Amino acid sequence: QVQLMESGGGLVQAGGSLRLSCAASVRYTTFDAMAWYRQVPGKQRELVANITRAGTTNYVDSLRGRFTISRDNAKNTVYLQMNSLKAEDTALYFCNAGMGVRTWWGQGTQVTVSS
Image (cartoon, rainbow, N blue to C red; front, side, top):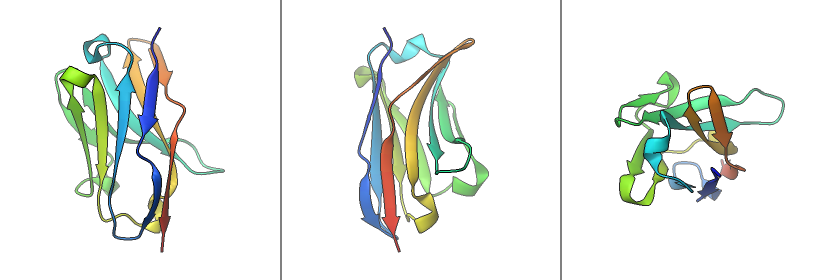
C-alpha cells in the first residue's frame, strides 16, 4: 500500500526558509513522478514542482528560483526547499505521486509565512 508522509511545515517569517519532506512507503521507482502541490482555502490545488523517475525537475514559472525539488533515492524521500518565503506562499502543501492513471496524495503539511 502506497503511503506518502509529509513533514517540515510550520510558521516562518517572510524571507525565511523551510524544507518539506515527503517519505514514500515504496521505492520511488514505483512512480512515474512525484510532486508538490499547494492549496489555499477557496482556491484550486496548484502544482508547485515535480520530479520524474529519471530525475528531471519541473517548476511552475512563478516559483522557479526560490523553490527547489530534490530526491534522496536511498530514502525514497522527496524534498521541497523553499527560500525567500513570502506571505503568499502560505498554503497547505501536499505531496503527490503518480503511476499511469493512478495517483496518491499525502495528508498535507501547513506552511504559514508571517509578514
